[in-house]
Image 1 (tube, rainbow, N blue to C red):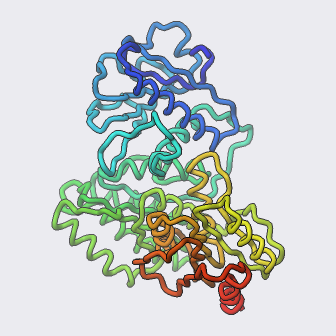
Image 2: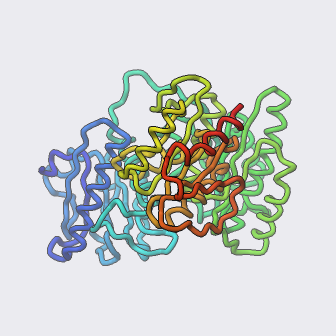
Image 3: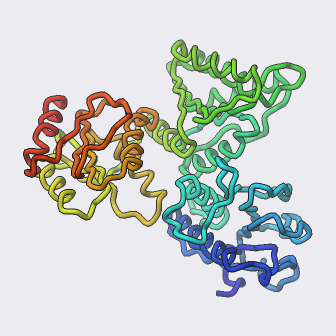
Length: 468
């Protein structure tokens, strides 16, 4: 496909002859994953092409005329800054600069969206030249962020303007959380919510307080990110905007309560939080210690991609929007069982499902999905909404088993509101696994009994007993 026909142009500011085989494969992997992510969020046919050169796109006939979005892909830090594009050069063209190397220091052009496509937890590059299905979930979600940005530019404008589903306040954060804040904003906007504030935060205390107060008063949900720094500080006063916004939330919540209205707050703290000052350390400890005295607030300490799911679920819950499930219930009183297996193609897994259905239980399972984004979202949904959980442990893999058990412990943070009626591990390996996690009421079903109906009898009885 020629570049003249493309909606999206991937511009690599390097000489083609200077790219080695691994870098060419990496570029092809990037394009494949991006196509998958775009297919995930839009039904439009979107074309993508590459342009690799040490010369600017300016003056290349037709290349920039049809492409609605240009992705400036910096594979490593060996590029020539003089070859980088800017929005001044490309009028009415959206530029997304994707930094694939942690040592890239180049400032992005004006009005350009910048996305870091490397493992920020380890500060290392990622490999897209191999099996993409082995990539971390965080990397897939970065591609989804890129896809959201692209959709804003190329989506066909509907004849009727969409009605906002409601207003959500996303608080100003310290610089180390700016990227996470921006991705949350993009995702909420994609879901149809109006994100406040729409303007810049004032730097002086009084205007800042009034600005935040007015925007909070319009919102039904407030999202706050607490990072490693006690910053940014307001002008002429030793208080951070992060702390002040949390204080203002209490004031607004009290005013809304007097008007028979309500606002909820989600406060996210990274799992690997490392405060950079004693003041920030004391603030975090004080905030967490006093949370029991606060109404309408939940403190969440999970990976950021999980927090995004929690925000979405909380917004849906507040608005009382029921999420449709593909599983068809046989009746209102029927209970659901989420069956997780590390060998879905064996006969045991099939027998488990048949026996549960025979007992008039609804079976939830991970279906075949094109990419990890779908799998993650489906797993969290099933974990949140099932009545009981059954793990089919058919292949010895303690790392896999511990990750699933860890998800059980984290499920309240994901958005689960009720206790499991039953939690069991059906052991189908030669020996019982050594479980170090302390999970209340977790039952292990021995592999000694061969009859699947007898093996599941205690599990089903527990569901019936606790479900009445």
